[in-house]
Image (tube, rainbow, N blue to C red; front, side):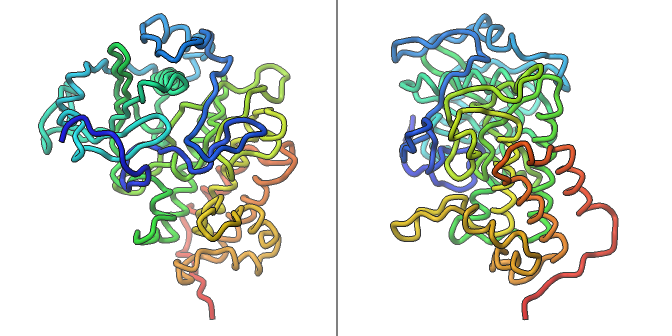
Length: 390
């Protein structure tokens, strides 16, 4: 069956983040629909008042990139411009067999291309890529699509997902990424029937996520990722983690400003409370989200659990009372680990999470503090003693 797009948004192994179950669409509207985004002032062109999509051109890209300092990036990347026919060939006309999942942006498909020329190939020949196909009716999705190209064409880091190219033909907007074989961290932590990842991998993922975030925050023109969550952390075959989905990213404050003001977008359970209340976005908003992801790695529980009866459970509210006490914090730990973790490492990560989740953003640590603390857990040393419950 060709040209397939539909079905569940919760499929495993999709090398692209999917829409969260708990999007934030505005300060006073916690919608349960798919993720809603806004068009930030860091991109200069104005949104259309019509529902139709604008055609992408080189001038669009240059305008969108205007406020980002290319000198900040590790390199400026040449992206491949794919034709729609190329991507139809790579995915067998977007067939159901190539389908990986669906999110707010659109559908995600698996395709095959030549490793050197990027020409489409038949399955089993060349390399696998993940292809995100924008919903035609999604104007805000067009803005996210352009933001992805703007940032990922100018950034390369081992802990950021690699964008290979794009397609823009008429109303067809697509993005082509490296394929991440292990899918999202969300699947490995929360999906039923999936083998829970061991403690050593969780620590490795925490370090990789911190490295990616540290890179973004360390640029001369700092970048606020704005949508850090388990579904936006993708894992390769060796469980190396990369940040993905830069559709909501934006440039950080400049000069003596402490924040930028925006409409509130993101994901419930991960968004910083001051950002939800005021729309003030800062690097410390990302730090809060990192604290939530660290809690998820410790506990194996979702940031916001709406599946257990009618009353939702917020992970931060449940876990924070335990994090101050080195003994009580063990109640937070994922029981599926069966005690196979380093007590000292778990306490270190719990203490960092608590700092990241401080209600006052000024007191939250910077990545210059967080990353070394996490990397120290994997510094050459004796094998850590594993803790087991009696």
